[in-house]
Length: 273
Image 1 (tube, rainbow, N blue to C red):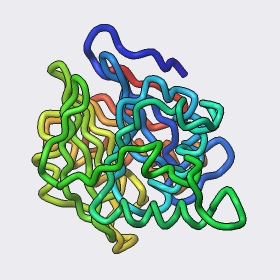
Image 2: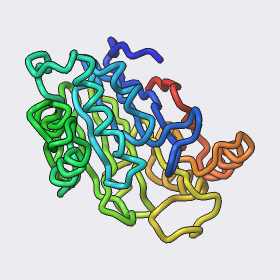
Image 3: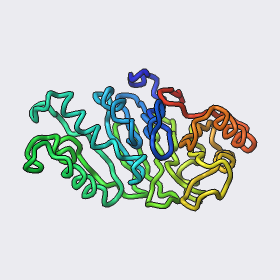
């Protein structure tokens, strides 16, 4: 994977993980690196994503978490502890905290989570591995519909339709736009999220519409959404199955509705906008 920041102003998308639910060998759960001119933004941090994010942590400008299902956020604690150890575990070496944008209520949840795994038997202490969500990450809770500026980028959290409160993210930088659906069913929210986007990273969890009532898209619905909103390029993701034949079928179902450039998310692949 090339972790260098862009030089032409166009974002690049690197898939760290794209497996729905729990990971399997070679297929981490959700995590997507948007590389920008002068930095990078990580969208979600599911199981298996932390080692990849830690390896390019010097380039990270911020992390955004779409929602609090474990396949999208569980590796945050692992990543935070990894960042401490990469700096020899000395608080003076931590430097500036990494901005971490969470859904409402996420701060308290992750601080309690961190406290369940203290360094010593006496409970959480002053060491930064016991204080990841105060000493390592600068935790902020985003407000759906309110844009966030990160370097050259504007990140708009858009509330989607899912079993838990969940936001997709519209990332705009230097005249280019990437839209990430996160987990969602069909919703009018695709209007502000995906309208005229250069690239739509959209979940295609289901083989057929209506298989689950959790708020997920089928591949055919993902293709319809892309076509309806004038998207120039689509990457399908959030795989419930990683069998090559199943993935090929998902691509075919989406392509029946979207005639443009359509690709499949694969771990460690980089897509240039």
